[in-house]
Image 1 (cartoon, rainbow, N blue to C red):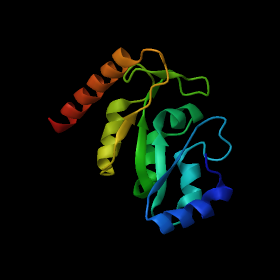
Image 2 (cartoon, one colour):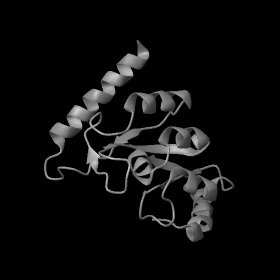
Image 3 (tube, rainbow, N blue to C red):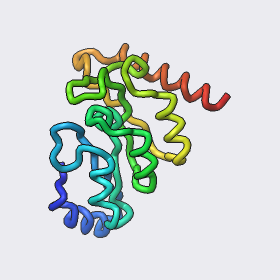
Length: 151
């Protein structure tokens, strides 16, 4: 995981190899990049190919407003970890989309508002030995929200 001290090296490699890199926020307990905003503050003046991987679950677990954070960092959101969590506290755990505290329809509307062009990657840490049914339910819920947005 990068730190603020390693960002200059990352920026040099981004330029050298003409690649994009996304710094991931890890919520409570992450002393470097707990929120999208904390990461954004450290990358906003770097090469524009240095961006963010917004983890909405960690953002909410930290107590940050994920919708405002996404809008504030919109020009650097290159990747997205989609999950729901059981509570907006450090003790919150991953749960099936729609069963937690994140307002998923609002989240999808926010991503549409910023014209997010990237991938929404499901990150589901619960039921590590057999997550298929829960991830399938989450995917169905997400598809339902997207269908409603298009209606």
